[in-house]
Amino acid sequence: MSEIKIGVIGGSGLYKMDELTDIEEVAISTPFGNPSDKYIIGTLAGQRVAFLPRHGRHHSISPTELNSHANIWSMKSLGVKYIIAANACGSLRADYAPRHIVIPDQLFDRTRLRDLSFYKGGVVVHMAVAEPFSPELSAVLYEGVKETGGTVHMGGTFIIIEGPRFSTKGESNIFRKWGCDIIGMTSIPEAFLALEAEIAYASMAHVTDYDVWHDSEEPVTVEAVIANLNANVDMAKQAIRNAVAKLAGEPDWPAHHALASAIISRRERTYVPHDTWEKLELFIGKYYQ
Image 1 (cartoon, rainbow, N blue to C red):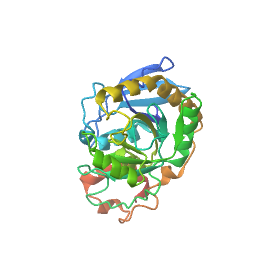
Image 2 (image 1 turned 180 degrees about the horizontal axis):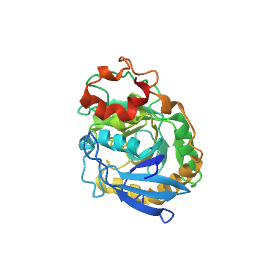
Image 3 (image 1 turned 120 degrees about the horizontal axis):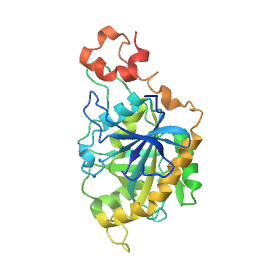
Image 4 (image 1 turned 45 degrees about the vertical axis):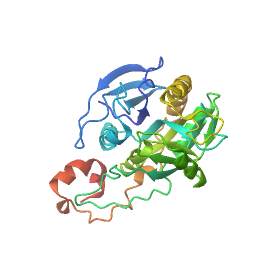
């Protein structure tokens, strides 16, 4: 199989595009277990793209149960350099309305039960995550959404809660006072792991509701989330196609060299336990003697 440079993680409907051709399904096993589902790989805008349904095709995986390590490792094993993530989110501000799209530039971690890094067991990495999303890929994605004619906002702090429950009103109002703009459950550890794998990562966050803080709106429900996501599916597909076309030529960005100055362990293969090397060689092999 030829290397695939672009990956998309999101809802299972995103790969159902008329323009997607030469489609194949690929199952990948990883040292971290199985990804969320089989990959749907096809040609879009002249480029091979790998689509992965984040929660499985039947939405059977809870946010806390997601095997993000396997999802990102398998993306890297395919040769992916750019990941476009589609996320549902609640809005914590009045001007980010349902059915708008936000390209966030910051993350705030309120998860409690998740493994946040690939690196342990003999390899120590202190990854710089001041910019958790790739600014360059975020700009490409913003333009891709803008070209659809939809309402898109560039920038915002995305607070990630453990889930699967929604917030209390007290929590929602505190998150607003903290300066957070949107709220979701799945971008962490996904974004951090992508950077640890030297993959540029950006999010297309679809606003489905006003969480529970808005006095004149109904509190968030599953029905409202699904309805607003479905209303945006065609826009999301077109935005992905637009972004994929703009990635022709394989631009090289800082995210693709994130490990170069982040590995603090001695960079010699003999100091890495065998089991650890089997898991991490895909990422760190080029940096070790």
